[in-house]
Length: 166
Ligand code: PNS
Image (cartoon, rainbow, N blue to C red):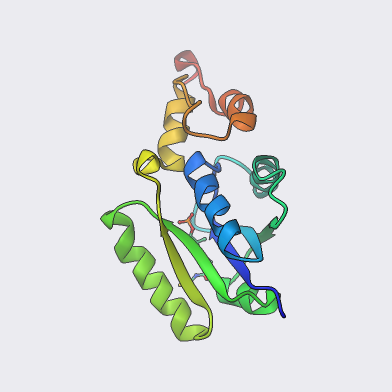
């Protein structure tokens, strides 16, 4: 029987424990999960695409059916080329819903056989976002509950700006 592959796309700038929770849960639902760092030319990320891929690889180390890839282009083209059956997204709150719903319907229109699967975030992670994590790290706050343990120091050191330098 063919493998059921899911793609978990995002900016992951950087990956948070919320992302990691969704990836873990997706990996128990599908034969293979590809975490896809998607380059968005309209965004100005703090980490380079290669850094984001490297950090995710560290965070998913040991998850045997999870791979990490980098992509610039239309998501459905990647999904089609790789033979995936689903796109997995995490939903935190109603505020995520409208945009996610719009993307899911647009993707469905373009590639009808691929389903978008929404996993509700774990209650503990409802408030988490990469941009808030970056703000906390930038001003020297404690991000240990927000990002995978193996990446704490790397993210802290990379983003910390002493107020005198601002
Ligand atoms: O983590 P993000 O930034 O919310 O992820 C958004 C992402 C990467 C999933 C979305 O922007 C995307 O799918 N980009 C690829 C380009 C594309 O296919 N756009 C049309 C979506 S309907």
